[in-house]
Amino acid sequence: MNERHDEGPHEHDRGLSYDLPVLARRRMIRLMAGASLIPLMGCTTEEKTPTSSASSASSSSAACAEIPEETAGPFPGDGSNGVNVLKESGVVRSDITKSFGDSAGGTAEGVPLTITLTVVDAASGCGTPKKGAAVYVWHCDREGAYSLYSDGVTEENYLRGVQETDEKGQVTFTSVFPGCYPGRWPHVHFEVYGSLADATAATSITNTSQLAFPKDVCDTVYATDGYDASVRNLSSLSLEDDGIFSDGHERQLAAMKGSAGDGYTATLTVPV
Image (cartoon, rainbow, N blue to C red; front, side, top):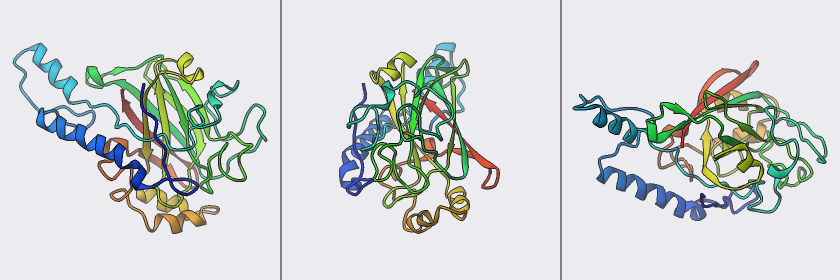
């Protein structure tokens, strides 16, 4: 089971000093991997001439590293920091724009966003989908607030949901593009569980990570109505300086399609 970490000294982020242990651990993993000649470039394979089928399989497996482990932040809603939305009826859903259950019933506004994550088996070289796993995603709203925690939305539970992966290892969520709050690059949190039963019991997390958005898409979205604060906040940030993504964001940067008018689709492969 993964460790849990918090983020952000202000309302949304405890800052770089808190996340240094996480970053140090990731850098140590990279150094150890380099010493072992294991590439950490995601789901790519080296161009080698295999001497046997066994060596070929070994090379393919080594070339697919697990998704980087990241902080779950102070607002996970999974029972590790106060409220536990995972045990509420209705959390298993694809449309996460609305609150559900006994919440205030609000709806998150913003540029439409579809999030598709493909969970694959890292040990098999990313070639095998993880059917029957589960993914819990959550992120802030257009104003940078997290439901269940932030002032004004403590009675809401929107922008949170769980799904079971299909035969392709995929889950798809309908959401809105998150805002940018001070100190953090725009992102989406997610946890991977071995099964839907584990997810709704809030137990046995296998991986915790974050998805990052490309700057050009952020700039386009934040030029639309309702994202005024995000323009200012993003202007002082970069992926290279972000406390989470600064030590390597290539395997967490979403591929994007769409437009601000019609909405965007963000896709990411998640090796576990």
